[in-house]
Image 1 (cartoon, rainbow, N blue to C red):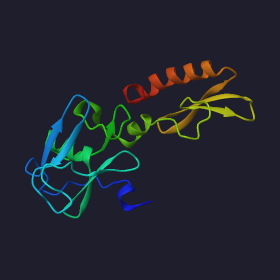
Image 2: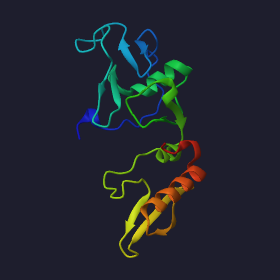
Image 3: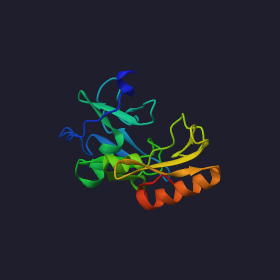
Image 4: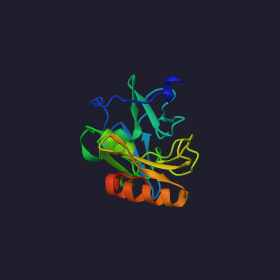
Length: 176
């Protein structure tokens, strides 16, 4: 994994220099980006988009030797404080940094909004084929623990049960 693609998990306060003098915030109906207000170096010139999009979709910005996630800088610039927790992209698009798509959440709440893993064979998050039972198993994390909601012969029924359980236990943090 290349350095620029590594996840940034440092949630500490940004350098004092990060403010509206450093960046221009540009917002439209479907995006919000940061541009450099002044030329910082030969690769970061005034007016250019700040940062690069990693393989995971997150926009990372290197400034004064430190790496930052663009959505955390935007949160800081909007609310005047560095987020204490994780920032969730409500619609699941990690490069969509509009205010309406960002919310401060716990790690557990952020995990509730994950998409189905690429290894999922049912096409439905939380529904897996149970080899021993020969049926679809519905599973969801409740209070941090994996909880099973039965085995079902019908995939559509399993999907419905998962949806109801997710609404009940994950509420507003579930992926819609």
